[in-house]
Image (cartoon, rainbow, N blue to C red):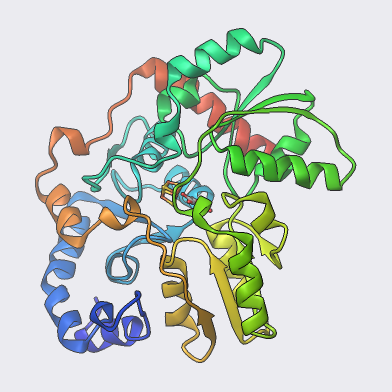
Length: 339
Ligand code: 13P
Ligand code: SF4
């Protein structure tokens, strides 16, 4: 279990926008009683904590057993032998863990149920679209509810969307709900000489759609040699200017393997925080774009759901939705494993 000094050593390089948000040794000391109680409860309940790369550093470094992108966390959820999974991320990710583990208790500690992508489309929308496009394979981004997944054929994440859509035999694809990611897929395939008939829904991520290609030009001009990493939820004109495009874990691993000294990450700024702790000597050109949904996770709420989860915190799915959504997620694992 971490001491105050060890926790401070991990967190002291994180700069979340302003000096008020930096971790002091005293602040780390104040976090410790909650972290210790969470660790005790994890042992008592045979629980694991999965945390997305965007959540607050005190969760990533204080209590998480697995951290990662949505694909890595789904795999961790699939492979765990714990009885209880506490999923610190957004609700659809906890639902995915429940789809993969219907017999386990899966708890969402996040009191804010949203994500602008998952909220963009309902199961009724997909049912209507399936009637309109009967010859299309329906591919859903993982940022969708379990009910939407239940109506789709294959799930994808930012780490495999390009390869899966390329591998699907049907050339008629309906991709939902992220329109910008869909446009990026179309450009990626066209650059390889592949022309599929891809229909798109009109959802967007409010964090990633904010970035403009002018900002990329500005940062490049003022930071010679900077490496620019972009998430595929960004606009195509931004993605086209990137040195690297990939999932959150893809970006972390790219920086880990790069000899470069300065980086600009066009994604939620939690990722820059992770890299500042690992590479305090490297330079990360700042953009402080927070996802209000991911940042709604707190140590206090994790403690509360381990002590006394409320009915709304525990993920419950109807057996029909769970089984149909499982087929959609398993189709993703099969296509990734085939590559
Ligand atoms: P990753 O799977 O790349 O972590 O993306 C999840 C997400 O919500 C990005 O906004
Ligand atoms: Fe959803 Fe965007 Fe937040 Fe990711 S960053 S959880 S896509 S709102």
